[in-house]
Image (cartoon, rainbow over all chains, first blue to last red; front, top):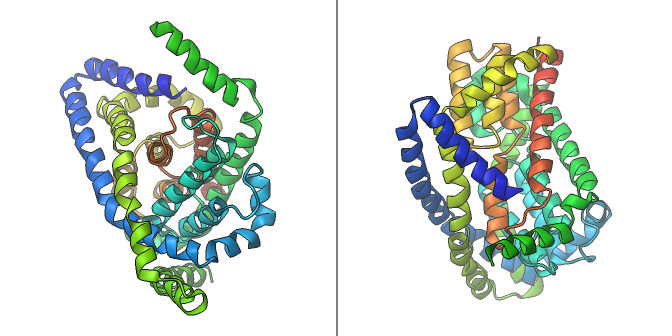
Length: 207
Length: 182
């Protein structure tokens, strides 16, 4: 899937770039974004280190386990293949709380910590598990209950008008994400074995 | 009433990080006798490796998104989709933002700024745009960072599910704003 989307975006970019007479801009964007990616990653180092350090303290003191246990009734439905009081649940809950409060800087390191812990439970290290996809989908659908600071700055006094609509819209998109993941994960073409099979046949093509 | 809730939430939010930064080590030190400084450093060490590990995934996704954006392909898509959108009452002015949102955070913020400047912050168009922006995330970036950090290359149903949720979010933004703010 990602293979086709990735190639498709670049191919359409080149095609439309030629059609629109913007091929120079396409080239420039490719080179710029390669640099931007590294800057983003380097910029993450400090914040990652800070939150991973704090998280390690929370883990060693047993706080993560307490949080994971407390919210088990909810998380067992979303992540049924993660064992009870596994540290992944604690990180997932903290990541979602940070997202809800609009603490993006804290949310990413906590989310990556959760991914690392989910990866420990993954038998096929390069293929996403159901829990990973669920976690990602909830994250991308955004569960923020506080308006982003950028939106408040832009909208000024009218920002309070969109408070309710934003919360409702984000709740609906999160519900849609959860339902979509639960439905799609049962489909054969998205199963783990299909993903692995696709990889094998791709390898065969190379031989 | 709503203003007070919104304001209250954001004023609470600014204390969360300082409280976590002090509260977690305090609990660990006072209750569990954890050697907080030593443990912090051990945990923080992973920050570098994880950040560096996501670079190839970020380069792959952001370069493709950047090429797509710079080519003006969105405008072509816009022309294709406009007749369909008119049928379902989706305002065409809000479509570029809806299409850009999953691709690029800075790109969609730019489009939202344009909407506010052109139509005014109290226009329905700007409010729909702001709701869309606030109710969704940059799906492709999050996928690259989260899956990249652990080396996942086969994302299975993550993209279809994520894009479906984005579409539901964008449509909800339109209809909710029409319902509540028109």
